[in-house]
Image (cartoon, rainbow, N blue to C red; front, side, top):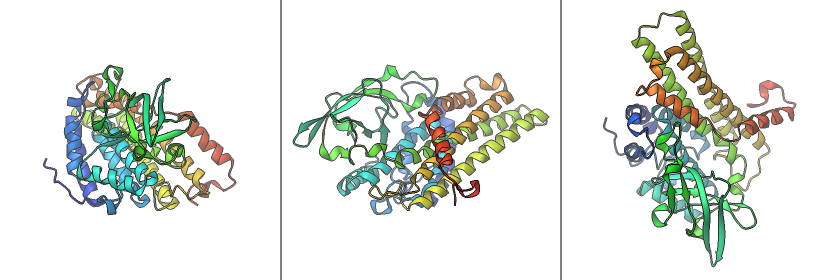
Length: 393
């Protein structure tokens, strides 16, 4: 398949291209399903098709994908399709979108132009590396606008390939500061042996030591504590939920193809299981559409303007966490129904179902599940609005 180089992608262009791209990613997924691998060719295709620049505002050469709230439904559809093709690619691309949203929300005009130009003209891949172990990462002020990093980050998806990651760390007063590390201009230590996962092998989510890296004030994004501000921190969970739902859709398609190939479509129990899977994945699609509607109604920009306090912020956060929780359960149910339908033979490598189940199992283990669902309950208990108008009134 030939993918056209798209200089000025539109939402329509992206939606038209993402289906054949996802199909191609699915065919190639087995080749990169190993530690140390990364879907380099696939990200080259995404760059050539305009996906890396798409999250930039139109004035910066993108189409506002995700940063303009009206495009949220299209973004979630795109992420779902990419996840259907390869969850590892979806994970890394979702991080790229997240990073460009943060820059355009909290960055200065000069930073927005600088990083926008790198995404647009140089096809730089961005990401957000926020996980860390007990040692953590600290940012040490050196004076005269200089800072030194000390410590490591874990689960650095796209390690060795993401060139502009957010690498957030603690300042001496304990506050959390966002910064972007120009990986192609500094020296770091990458522990590739740390990443020996069950699934998501192709994300190259290594442990990286940044000790000794020096940054300037221009590399720091926003004010201390901005990364943890709501609704931006939690509203974005719908992005990874969309990628995960793509994995569930892949399993639905693969299960159906397997049963058709084995001539087992007339069995009533198989029909019942496929019916349950169809309901599950359609429910997920409706959750994404609902989340997109709530985000679009909240503010024209994703998460709103940082200087504006919104009284309906908690409702947006609660709805996003509902969608994330519901889609997690949809994915779990779909995996179980798939396994019951195909049995052992369909779950042996190199059948793609085996890989998708491993990838999805690992990817679903996102942090703070209990806090997310408890927050939904706490919000609901604090309201008196009837259920019919609680979320969309």
